[in-house]
Length: 107
Image (cartoon, rainbow, N blue to C red; front, side, top):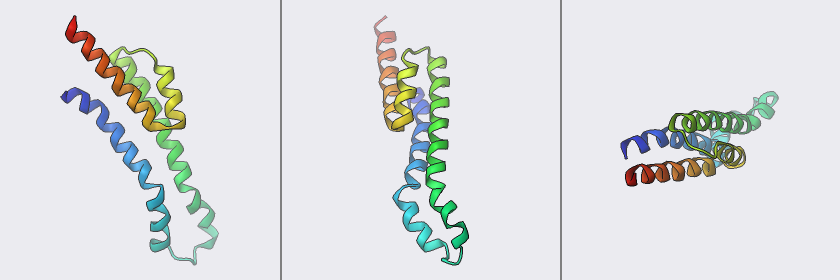
């Protein structure tokens, strides 16, 4: 079980960072940033979008590495799911890991 949590831990951290750039970013930018920075406001507004894309790409790369390391199938399913909803790709990985452990225990 320790190995299972080790594999999923990195995904949990990435998903927490992704969620911090949602609604908390909306309130943090109002409190922390001055309104005098209007020329950079468009860039500041788009930071959550860039961070979201970057984290989704990182999650997809990590999924591919973990699928190859654990010799699991359905890597395309998890990657496509992570492209639209990253948590779904992590759940697919977790379910396949649990199924693989169950098969190894019964064999």
